[in-house]
Image (tube, rainbow, N blue to C red):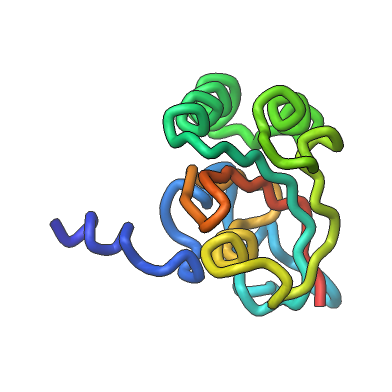
Length: 143
């Protein structure tokens, strides 16, 4: 049970399925070789897939798992974008789910927490926000 309790920690801890695809510290080194300890940066670049239905977002996540994550691979942004265009109910889906760079404080609650806690190149596990269910692909961080 101790392990299950750890998985329930806030997204800012950088643990769990969202870290699939690589080491947090190695992937997040920027400016002068300093490691950005997930959650301390000011801006993040991300893509996402949004669905009102949990079953649909779980179906998309299963496709990501079977195609890349189960093999320990990172999901290529272009492939994530294809799934976003096909499945996302957000207007950003037309742009492959690309949200561009956004600052801390722009996105609400759980979305911001997961976006800023997901390692560069990693894909988050499905999660719920006030807008529905999401999967995030972190493409970069700065500041």
